[in-house]
Length: 419
Image (tube, rainbow, N blue to C red):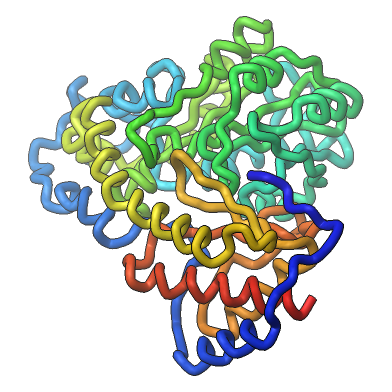
């Protein structure tokens, strides 16, 4: 996505923009683009999970899935997602539905117990910090705020976080214990990390011996085109660079099967997995293995996941195409905004003229179109340029989406005219 020139504000017909906005208010819209939720038709793709006969409740290894135990999760399900998440099956843990919960717990474990390669619990080391590529995922930032972890913004490039900045900061400051990464089809920019970026993350020297990459591979199989973009294997790269314990990998089926009733995954080195399971065992006796069994049988294998996600793509691609066509029609060539054209994931990142994103969101809200708050894509909710707006096209139907995006463009024109 190109950067908007800020030297002069493009001319906007204020009267026409105001008239369009007044007409928008008269329509009393009630539309919501705040979160990247699957729409009901996407959820219907996994309806077989709700009707699957689970009376045969034994897993492939004979485990009675009705009972306690099996903290690591079912081997057959871990095998299915080993390839997509790039984690050997015996180093992959399958838990309950939320990868966010696993990230939360992993931070708690690191705060309260020494991670492999470390010498002290994070709570014993004074103030700690995470590097936060921006624009980024607001729920990652919320976890840092929850635990009082300082957030240090790092600019995103077309190849991932600016690795010159990352390497300099992580190499100089032992307070920096981690970096948040959404490596494929990043939230919200859609950027996919390059081979060079992954290699430098694995190889760079860090001042903290217990530095960790929180590798949230949320969109590992969420392609919007027939080209299935791939990323290098981070765990292998870390092992090759003699930093085998550096990466924590997270993923889930939340946007694959049922968002509220899926399976989440944690993957890492053997030492990290042993550490994680040791502490997870204090919190739970085991995950919902019946749900895992249903997933394994309905999805079948990795090819079954790929075929399932192709059906998701058929539902999502028209929505992304619609958003891009409306933005191009209404804002193309105006100099008021630029936007991403992602190959996968769930978001489009709209950048408006500096200093106008909050006003655009406010105007849209008053017109009945709810957007993610401006600034949510930055730590502490503060976007220094006040320019980034995240668009989540997945949930509304096409007719509602067309109304919402057209309304958004009206708000962009009015905000820039008045600014």
